[in-house]
Length: 210
Image (cartoon, rainbow, N blue to C red):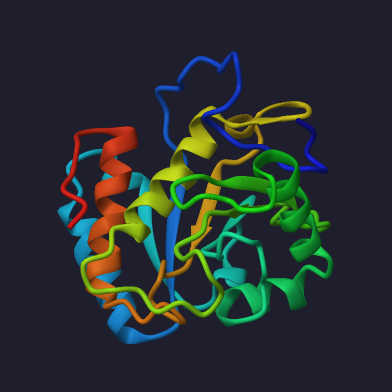
């Protein structure tokens, strides 16, 4: 799988060895409720918490090699933070849709992720991990989609391959907006707890996604 068409984890015959290190994760919030939820979630982490920090501001303000798109399963980037990405990185929506078509036949399941180039020097990569199947879908209060999306992002960093080698060798910092807290309408605290649980699932102790 090339960088142009995107990469994914979970379907390759051979996976690279799992790395013992972790990326830096920057949790971004443009409003105070989400910033507060992120802060509480970081405080609850039991593993590698020093690698996770909160940024009060736009995800595009962060110096990072990859940004996270909490997209829909079809790769449409027409609303919320995804529309911001498409304006900042013209053509990135087509990159995502092409990767989804090439790897998943046009529908990226929740719990999977693809990584595609942005066309910029930094952030050079966008990781698309859907929190909803359909564009504009409202998430129920008991959903675990933010957990599944965050876990897919972390596994993409840990196991994903680009044309030139492992994702983890070119991505040191990941900038993540709220997952499901915009168009999805999910409470920030619920989403933040699930992201923290996914971090510990992949990089440390197992957490409770609810």
